[in-house]
Image 1 (cartoon, rainbow, N blue to C red):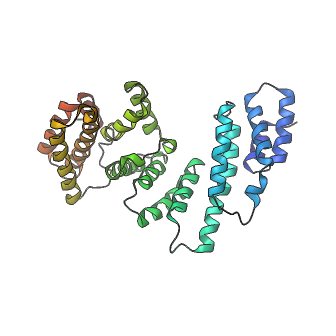
Image 2: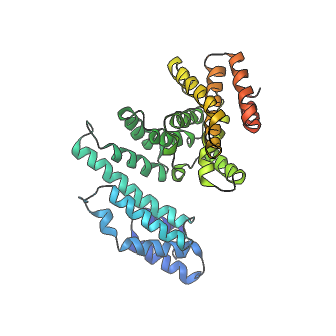
Image 3: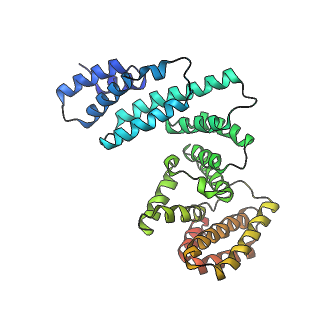
Length: 314
């Protein structure tokens, strides 16, 4: 008799015809089981496209499979299958193969001058199948090539935050801070799997009436309020000076900015106050400056000041 675990194993191993047969047997026993329906649907879908996984020389290595998966995922969501174990199993098969295609491309073409977008996409692939160790290795290499691309910092942050250790989590929060300093608009919530970011997004959704633009506007500050730890990368004096200059500029802008832009300036100022506060406390031990920053933050957003106070345990 077919078992659900056997069917999942076949899906994850990309044995789609076998998986289809196993899920068909399971559906005979429980025709209304959503997991079995999802598995049967996924197995049949990818059995008809198995050449995309087995082709030794695909026209667009990795990228083609990533796009094919996204199209399938949209269909699965419309059918209500997206959250099932069956879909997660086939995802590991398809995206695992996509990551192999990227790696094979690097081996053929060499790593001296790789296509940066391929490195980033491989990192995304590995994160989606929860292979955080290999994703971190690839993304750290990508960061050395383009250190100012904030999207890489956000992906690296997720790798560290999902390792489950406090030291790694603090490093991950540091990567989020650095990414938000460089370019906050490159943050993609589709790759924010860590609990701290998910919980923060959920809270912001409740506070900002699920207005995505406002949620993403405030995310850097809200996450920075929870990042008051010693394990973040140390900001050097030049970086601190740059943040201070930006802070002073925004403080002046806040006095004259049009009402429709005021919230944007406030959110950015709160983030800068909190980033500087973390450095003042944990890097430079400047308690007087830290108090000044907290007073400025309280004037703009008392709730964030309280969150930061709770995070530092002060």
